[in-house]
Image (cartoon, rainbow, N blue to C red; front, side, top):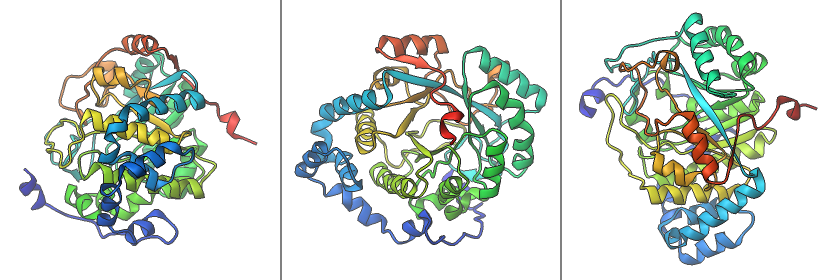
Length: 390
């Protein structure tokens, strides 16, 4: 399958690195040096990181290194303590709303990839209204809008649909194709609160091997999207890598550098990270770098120790058992009863429309019960726009 796809590569002309933005940092960074950064960490480095209150990227690298594995229990305990101190005993729930699975990209790991023979659907106003009503009936007040990446589902579509959605939800985030600064500003005016742009991997060579055609094959343009989001003044910026495309430790260290870069420049914004592992999908791939459950727990705890103010999200990609134990580890938000195909909430479609298979299919009521069994309370809204004004 990979060889067939490589023959169809149609990469866009690559955008140059932008001075002062993270693309310039990546251009001046050697991937192998970053890999050695975590490979060479020792027990002394780990103990030093655990003793500090304010950690730098070198400390983060130590905490996700093999040398930190014997200290996993201590890391998880401290992660839980810091989360309770900063965010209290609560966990917020959100739902992804897939507006379209039409996509002009060829990505080796995604069910929406343009060459996959799946039924395509872009919600119209009537279908959207049914989805909104179905999601709202489950209690959600925070939704994440998701689409494939295509010019047919772009700014004119977003400008038409967001005003129809926003009145029903306190928080509205989106995970769509990267946009320009002025476009993000316009979407904020009509109700957008947060934007998630997952880089998938920070290694350019690997990135281009998995993004074979379409706008997403432009590495630097995607890499600098969080900078543009910050320049637009969006309230929350979300980062993530697809764990499995490359060495998960090296990609995570690069993302830690990215976070610090953004925090220094766009300090008025909040930041979140997510931990998606490659999941089965139509035409999917075998992960290059498998991260075990235990290693994922180590990574999650390391992020919380690295930044106690960071919002951390867990999706339904993970199993019910993992999510049950992960509730207290450092997360601030979690998706529930997710549908990864357009129209999935109202129609409960079983057709091949999905971006990826979810693992935790339990209804919202069961997720709420599980969270309370872990001694935490469910919240549907964790901030108000009025708190950000002034």
